[in-house]
Length: 153
Image (cartoon, rainbow, N blue to C red; front, side, top):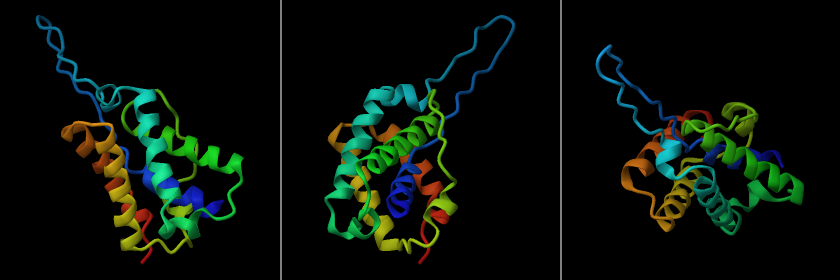
């Protein structure tokens, strides 16, 4: 379970924090930029990508070692952690309550090759749902920011 949580949390880290900025002036109303969460289509759209991503990981033999022994409940919890992390990182209303990435992935022995394979699965899930390039890049930037805390070798 710990390995699955770490692996999924690792991939959740792929979500990107998008901050909105608006300049205010006394005469001109601020121009608000939509959050990444809104640009991705909100919770349900992010959930579709996360579900597809997790399915890809779970059916890839390279990731069996990280997911073996998970109960159905543990799988649901892992899915929710990833979804919450992506949602929160994208500026949505979700709150990620999982552990920090370094703690979650410590001891799993995640390699560069594991990281690359998981990243390809995430990109494939994003492509399946036709996530536009800008939003895909923003989300992937968040995930990449987590790499140093996830990859051990």
